[in-house]
Image (spheres, rainbow over the protein chains, first blue to last red):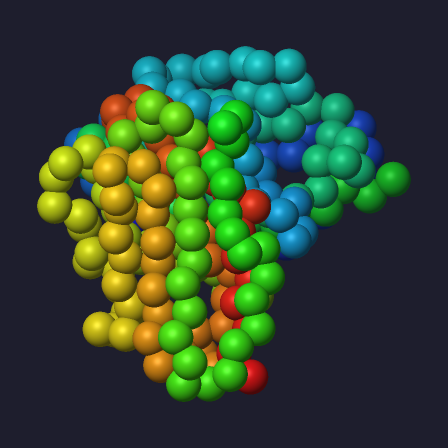
Length: 110
Length: 114
């Protein structure tokens, strides 16, 4: 079992829909959780971080964390073609070092 | 600088040659990480520096790979006797080193071994 697992996708949604990206992790001691966006040919960019159970909203993005279920998700409301990218889930288990999932590729179709 | 700077952005080298990749982290960031990413694949962890602690080298794929960080700032990743399977994008990232902070990535070095 991988330490951080994501649906490999690809995930395709129509413009204006809600995109839901999911991630599970194996280490119950994990404390910090991150979502990165990586456009094709570019480097990953941090878009969301979450530390407590519940929801955290930032514009069209909502991160959800459930530590009991070892599950973290990212919702993108009103999806735009510019949201088309690979989304990486990352979990901090030791101080500052993150473990990354393999990413989910999202395509938003106009 | 404002961001993580990596050089060169592209490197083409012949099989068997040595290469050095450079990373200049964000000023004040104590943690520095090297990853590599092959085409269409996820991030592969290579090495992690945190302050003055011994680096976490657990991801280095072979003894041909080494890295150093001088003065707690700039880092150099060296690959000796390059092989075609070393071709990838090498990404450097830095962070404050605290558990609650994510990474800032550089733009990467695309290494092609011919």
